Image (cartoon, rainbow, N blue to C red; front, side, top):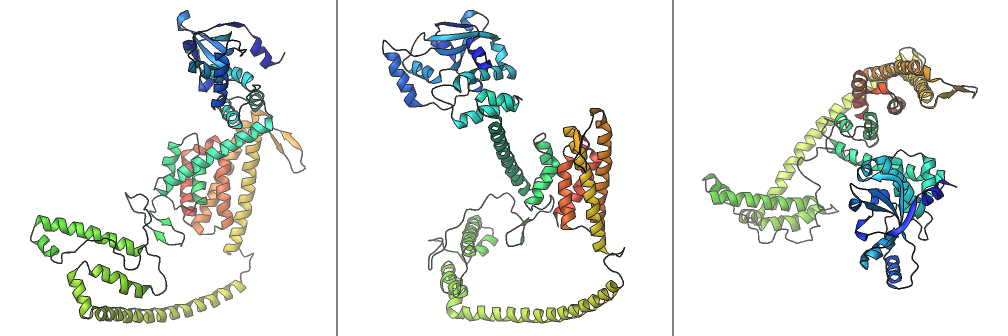
Length: 496
């Protein structure tokens, strides 16, 4: 007899149970989706005199006295919903009396797992099969209860590879959601070590560093963010996301009815409170006009558009500005612009002369560099290119060593160059951990040296973040001195 059959046949009594004593628990039953058509179907059957509906499968949970006992539904959620609709008093049930549990036992996660497993034994073979979503959800609950994949597959009646795929997809989804959540906090200015403490046991500090590097987010304390056009922008404080403004149509007044009192500044200086209030209100509204203007998508002949449409609209708000424009204000504006142009042209000429001087100096330095390079080839001990090559090669050996030690500690075996499998005894764990610690310190020293002498390269930076991934598996990665040194290297590499 298999395990499912044994669960169904163990100590079962068929008798009528008060409906008010029957309970349905989402935590201990795989059912989630209630099909209303099926509930209506059972409702009609129960209301007929000669129905042959199977009894509910329930588990007896003892209370302090017989009246306080409850009966958890193992199978028959749709029948239970139909019985509630017709307000049945004492439906017929198959009562499972074993295993013996009390109400306080239901707080034990292991007990919850056993009851959920009993319920699955019925529902996976039900005429109404569990949906794929219900099976995945119950598989995740079993995973939280530390069930093996083989036991989960047996409980939900699928293959082990299917369970592996479900759990991997769910873990990947959870990790991606966690990654996006952490990246949002990093963009808002949160620090890596603060997030590592906040999400302790869910993600390591090294992983947060790697995510930040992949998302190209500047290290904490820099206060700038990279935009798509490669310009640095200081994020506004205390403001949420700006809603996109509607485009301003030609000749459209952004704030109809607003008039600007040209004397409002003077009234404010005289200490008139109403004048100050009017001034603040006017400034606020003019800022809105400016927001509309600056959000316009610029196009050809934009200057003509500003002069012919936007400037007159703003002029309508101020009698003095309107008067200035009517008596040749455009000419005044042109003269001011011409003056600015001449100033900028002179600055450009001076800058060009300086640039030519620097260009000549660069050519001279290039010639000197070429002369020196003729006497110092690629293999020269003083060549930075040679240093980068040697650094990358040494780091490759170190990372390979740490990876091999990680595999030996986690899997208990390693494969040598001849592809022979060598078993590693548990007694060697401490010695291997010490070797891994030594290799980690040497690797960190390599990265610090590369940062200090500016001989890092894209390959060495990539090796650094690969090193962080390998380091997560070792307990010594939480050592204070290691964390502090890695943070300094990460901050330097992240800003490159």
